[in-house]
Image (cartoon, rainbow, N blue to C red; front, top):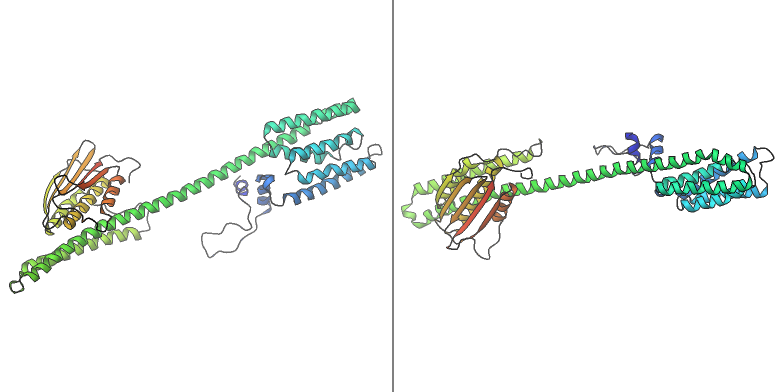
Length: 427
């Protein structure tokens, strides 16, 4: 059965290449596979159909001539009979293009041939081929009506010649019915094979689209992670470097070595933290395990470190963390990254020593995040970044929502609502 289904695929020279690109040699399909491919293929779409049908007509004509020669004198055709017998096989050449017209032409030639009492066996194979073609290319109702019409016309003509011949025709009509139903069965089988192949192609296309979607999602996730990590770390390093430079330039003769040393130590700690997170991200990317391996996710327990880093950068952060239930890891990671980006933006855009308020609390079914500052927000006309876009994508990835914008009384505000129960469609 598997070999039969494979035969339904488009015929090509050579077999499938192995996954290893070093194999280039192709093999010719076996005879059984080629036969099943011919059976499964719609005859109207077969290559070289007219040429093959012309050869079939010649073979059938030779067989008919042999059958007519080896018969008694009473049934042997004369000149008119030979003409009709040979003419019966001519329409077979176009049986794929116009099956009904071919059958009608064949009946128009066979009826007078039988009426003149020539050998009745000689044109029978050609008639069966025409009937089979009609059955295998047309709908079942049309096939049944066509078969009934052929039988009715043939019987009527034979009744005008001989009642005995008409009864004999009805007695052998079982072969006609068998040919018709054989064609119908083959037609249904081809439709079944075509549906299986179509489903396989559709499933493969779906798998490819799913793979592309997963790659796009993974690229977006990596871009968000790298942005959150690098933007936060670089912003802190920049602020701490500015503090050190300011101390060095303010009063070189009364150098505050302790402040400078602390700033440099903070820069070193930030670099080590950023290097560790970056290494973890790269290890996940290099891992050859399952595609959904993402390593340990940051959580709410890392928020105090973010607040401490923002305070070291000069921000006056007030925190209010009231979370009574542990959120899912993905929700905790999303809240961590949102707070990280919001604090980074406050340090970068809110001016020197901004007042920042962080609130995090849970309510029935949702985790609420709020980060506000008293700064001026991003500089108008500046180069747009990816921070706000990344925060919104973080919230959407777990089925939540995020709003960010200036406050009516000044400053900037970021609020997010993240569900504590994640559905199947969230990641």
